[in-house]
Image (cartoon, rainbow over all chains, first blue to last red; front, side):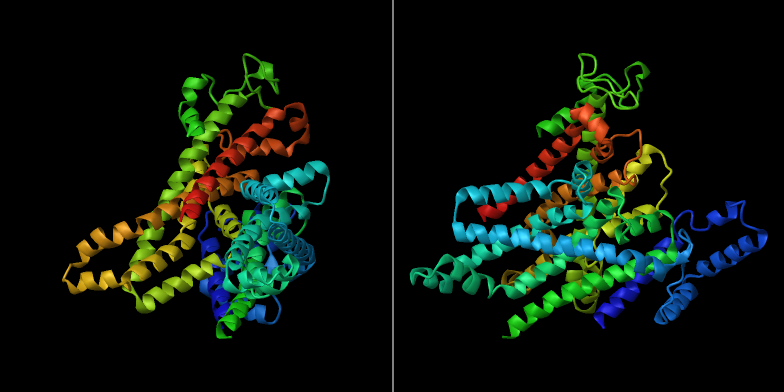
Length: 276
Length: 256
């Protein structure tokens, strides 16, 4: 219910902002000499309908329930079609970003606990600190120069956040009584890590996924634009620049649902742990 | 501080205007005349780097100041009101935070005028960062204010008959100061990186006004990089300064 309410409010807010943005009243089709008078009149009628925000949004939601999210003005294609075409690429990028970022962050933090070497900790801290300080667009450029796929840049944006969070969690857990007892009893570091550190931290680690999805999606926008990858990130940029009302509302709602569902999963894990 | 100091004295370090084109020295290599060479339009790179650093290092803290003032005012105010108002405010900030920061930024930036004077574009970019960057800080400040309002010494102060004004100025203000300052310092590197990403996409500070983000656009051409490795300098400087901010934020954490 909360997800639905927030999504509707965010969709309305984005529609409101777009409606009152400069240049909204201007339609590029009016300048197109290839279009006849009838088409231009239709474009004007369509634009006039969009001006009444409340009725536009109500109609948009009503049509949306039957799977029609309207026509994109800048692409002249159905919004559903545009999203359907580009979503798989972005989902794969997000999978790489979230999976790779979590795996890298978790592996480094775990290796430090297992090996307990100051040099590894120093190298990991420097690497995570460095990638935390580099704009995601610049990381995408690095991949562009080397000819590698830009989607590999996303894990490098996500991993420093995951590493720092997990390292802090493991650091606190390492000094807890049950772990100290396990160490005193002579359990192997690998067993302590898996059974006594990572397993009890599963809810917290699940909540990292929510954070990672948000970070990965945010990073995918400049990365997809710079590496000319036709995904949702690039579509966001084009929709915003073209002031494409139906497309931007659909993407805002989709992103809101995506982030809230992933955050909700993490919160549920934490709630279950709290109850237990 | 060194970078900031040099950038502030940009007009003393170099006499060349950042926008002036030297047509006879287009894409020139570093020389005595142009210590960092010139860009593809024949503009002095040193001058652009110094003025760009000045723009980024003056405007990002200004944006962080705006965001912190808004966050403190709203977070403190709604926590003080309590009840339904506080819950509604918390729901709003949570909804706002649930959207990826760069997505919100790019969407709203694109809705504002793009074809504007360079100085106006800088004001719009950093103003927007300040006006949109407050919800996370507000959430933390609201929680801090709530903790204060439920503390024993606050209750005792109220029971002693201290008025709302002195209570806010003498007790709440000093207690919230470390939290507010932390939010201010945290926001600066975030805003510097956000501006860099926005400018890389052409939605940030407009030419010919330089900023770290707009200077990074030169990196898009691999040819420029191989011919003139000095084009990497803005990126190196940005990473160095943001790292300094990160270290500055890390030390107090470790001390506590």
